[in-house]
Amino acid sequence: MTVVDDQAAPPPAGPPPRVLDLGLRVAGAIVVVVAGVVTGVLELLLATVRVGGYLVGVSALLAVGANIVLSWFAYEAVGRRWAVALPAVPWFALMAVAAVRTSEGDLLLAGDNWVGLAMIVAGAMTFAVMGFRQILAPTPNLGG
Image (cartoon, rainbow, N blue to C red; front, side):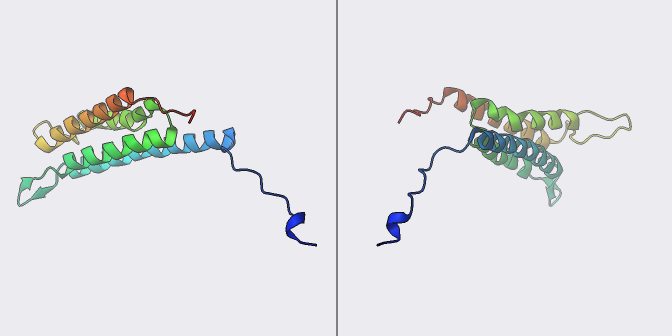
């Protein structure tokens, strides 16, 4: 008489339930959208950083690095190729709002700030390249 004979084998591991999978994808999409806004605000704040009285391009470098990571994470979290638009749309909207002068005359991103202009160009090109790479990527073979 053994105890092992009486125990049932655990059920085989399978894919997560559809509701859980959908919930995780939606949560990932929300995280990516919020991260797009947060990195955009951080890049705008760093666009005016000066060292020794000269503008430094740390904001443009951050835009490239952050947008690569956001694009990659968006695809991984949501599982769809169009997910690169989730961080890109709020980022572009934030940059557009920052470049418009308010009725009081305030301006977050001036046209004479080369770092701000480089940040917008570099960030936009990064999202464009990452989106283009997703379009050209081969379809994964799920059949095994």
